[in-house]
Length: 640
Image (cartoon, rainbow, N blue to C red; front, top):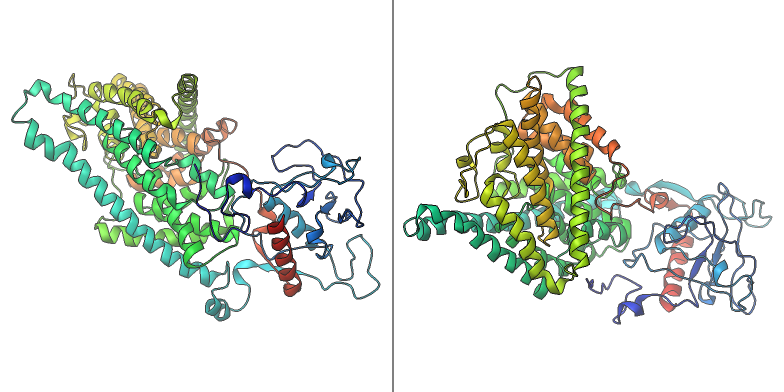
């Protein structure tokens, strides 16, 4: 997909994507033990280059834990001080473009000696170099006999000055600015979520209940009712494919995460395709839900408000506001501001919250969005499942051990799902069906599996938020909320442990087929529903395990293995079920599944963040010097 050209991006022009990449002749180059592509091959040190005619500065040794030398290349930046720092990483959306320097003489100090590195890493290294200085340090480990440099004192970026001064100026990255932006983003995302939710559920009711009651029941024979499932299913599959072909790539959860890491925002040109594709996917009964589309939509809105309304340029500050939008979407959708917000933060990484400095502001925005969305939709903020009565009154050590065991089983199910899904994707790729020009055929293939399973086992249709209750309680199929007719083709009822296991397996297959078919949506609730089915199957084998614990722990084990959200999944499951005493066991299941699948990443864009050393602090003491250096480097990069 092609992102929109942002005015705030100093590296983006009106040309093609190739025009955006700085030329090899000029730029900033670094020698480091890790290059910009993540390759850990130790690069060769630059041994040549002078400040003479070539205009290339010499390497400056760094007194900071043995960091390799930094080489500043290009005559345009010759006026920069040898020790360069910024007041935060600059906002460069094209973060994966590398600035590669080369020596003019082509000798030993040639292109190989000037290792390339991504811009955010460049800023980080320069900041660390600046931080290593003390008053009078000349950067070579000695003391400058002349004036020396004033020390730079790092302070928390969120509290740069006094509260009223930061509030008056809405100083970038400060607490007052975060409060104002969170209120704006939370309100905008709450309204957007309400509109999406209202349209979706109106169409669900109309297509799956109103129209059949008006046109089918009195005109078709009862045995023909089941034909409504393939009529709607295949029709929506075709519309989903046409959306991708004519409106463009909608993106998905993996793409959203990729954008958070690389650009800090999601382009608005993905919003309309995502709305349309996800609507048709869900209306067709696919095993994906509205959570991921809402995350992508609200993330785009958060970044848009940050960049266009508040004119933010700092990459990490824009990312904060994007994460606010993501947190708001999930907090509003789940009805759990803490669990939903944490999910939006955890899902970007494979092991915990790496964008930790944005946690509090994201949760605050989640609260705001929750109030707006639930207020407009008049939905209560409460649990939605009642798995068994009475609820768990307490928890003991055995519950924690049991939860850990079930979490391990859930990790095994997730591993089987992952292997199956990648095999299916490989087959589709072999036949060239992953090309968006063939999106309609791809959707029909995935939709065929969804429709067939739905006709045989209606419990596998839709995303599972409402179906979870029916599955966990083994209630009659007539209680299924969305699908019609609920009896399906053979009148299937989930009334035994074996049938519960069958529902779990078929739900996993349906999820894979839905994703492989190019449908758009989230798989959080679908995995929850599959986990509930496997949990009921387990209780039929080991009756001593409480039903609530079995269903919730299995759901957590599967979902955490795929999404890597151990904290959020535990909170959400216990909140939605009203089973607070199940938390120790569910958390144990989540943690065990997280550890067991640490080397089995499903979402490939969940990568390690790269700007930790420049994310928290604002440099005080040489503010004007830093600002001038920052401006000079921006100008040099633009020229390059």
